[in-house]
Length: 136
Image (cartoon, rainbow, N blue to C red; front, side):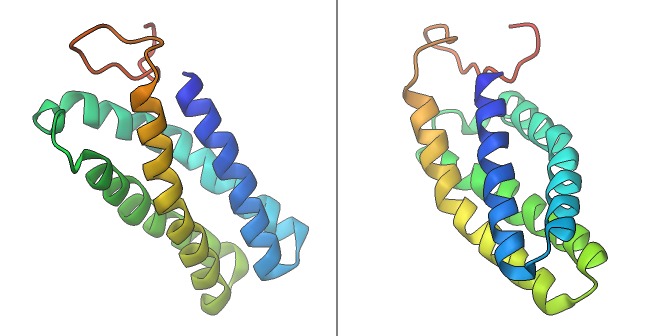
C-alpha cells in the first residue's frame, strides 16, 4: 500500500506543477490533476494486479521497461491526453502537459520501481509481492 500511496503523491505534485507551468491557471491545474489521479487510483491497482498475474515476466531483466511502457506510455498518454484536452480545450497545451508529464515520469517510474525491488519489507523469499495487494 505504501508503494501506491507514495507514487500517487509524487504524481499528483508533479502533474500539478507541469499543468500550472503550461496553463498558468489554478482551476485548470486542479481539475486536470484531481480527475487524472482519481482515474489512476484504479488504473495503478489494475496495473499492479496485471504484473502479479503475469508471472512470465517476473525474472526478465527488461521487466521495469515493460511496466513503464504499459503504465506510463499507453495508459498515461491516453488518459491524461484526453482529460487534459477536454478540460483545457486547446490541443497544443494539452499535448504539452501530456508529453512533459509522461516523458519525465518514464525515468521517474523506472527509478521508483527499481528502488522498491530492493526493499525487503513486505516480501516473502522467492515470491514477488507488491504492497498494493489488498489484505497482505
